[in-house]
Amino acid sequence: MTQIAIDAAFDSGNIEVLSIDGASARLAIPKDHNSEFKQWFHFRVAGKAGEEVTLKITGLNDSAYPGGWPGYDACVSEDREYWARAASSFDKDEEGGTLTIHYTPASNIAYFAYFAPYTMERHHDLVAEAAACEGVELTRIGETLDGQPLDMLQTGEGDKQVWLYARQHPGETQAEWWMEGALECLTDPADPVARSLLAKCRFHIVPNCNPDGSRRGHLRTNAAGTNLNREWAEPSAEASPEVLAIRNTMDETGVHFAMDVHGDEAIPAVFLAGFEGIPSWTDALGDEFYRYERILDRRTPDFQTELGYPKTPAGRANLAISTNQVAERFGACAMTLEMPYKDLAAFPEPEQGWSPERCKMLARDCLAALLEWLDQS
Ligand code: ZN
Image 1 (cartoon, protein in one colour):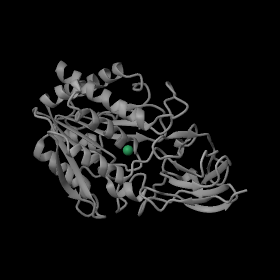
Image 2 (tube, protein in one colour):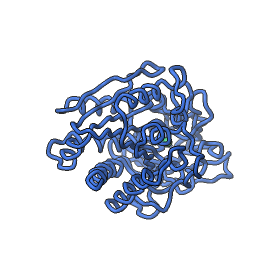
Image 3 (cartoon, helix red, strand yellow):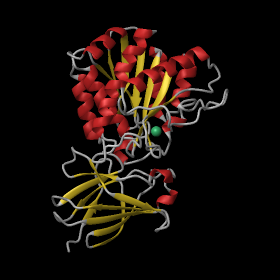
Image 4 (cartoon, protein in one colour):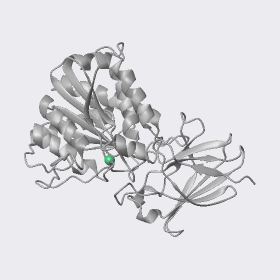
């Protein structure tokens, strides 16, 4: 039997090899730098075509979200374009919690990841391609601690200030696949939804809020080990320059509508979270959020409102979280969009599960819902 080889020393790679025995390996997930979070994995396995590999990712009971593993199948690709699922099972009693992945590659190589990766190289392709489109303006609004650019794209001639931003949590790659769908829509000169939105809105888009965590292969933090979505009350140049740059730019533009795009480890559904509990909550502003939620729910079967986070009680909102800060600071209709790592429990697609393709289609529905929301108000 062939001895497999495992590598992760590439853009967004992350795994520790404990041992390899023939076509089986014992693995562990390294923590994000300077933090306790671990959940993101991305590595390649070189083996032999047609020979099954068995991969055991151990020590998951103390991962960031142990509830993410039961009912989860690992993502796998042989060409790094099409991502399917490899049958996986979780045993909390094996070696501190072990996810066992079985897969038989058709070629001598296969890539495995927590979700279809979105590398920094692909990010640069996305930004450059969008910036080359008519009416799109690129601004480098900041620099990360690793010295990477923080990019914003702006487009549209309207007076509604719309902010779309993603990947504060870098391992939530769903969020940048969503961005790819949103940008394809907004830069298509033939798209009627885009043409109408661009007449009504000025879009401010940050496709990746956390380039350092993305390239380092982190789940949740930047190069300093900071969880950016707990920095919005008091961002600093030392710990969270990304949030500081984005919030300062928002202060210049103002915000009417904001969507912060994320992934959720445990919940097998797409859902929105609002800003209940902010000090200046009004039912009128809250109703604007619930109205958007209803429109999106009607537009796509991939969205639902039954599963999600509990609503925060009155006056208890954490203003360090982006959606709460943006709603409070600007009186904006702000929201957090969450997509799953697992498949949708209520609407599964077993071959791919929740996938890049579905993230991109959801983005189009979110934009169409925004247009309908604006037309009704
Ligand atoms: Zn998140």
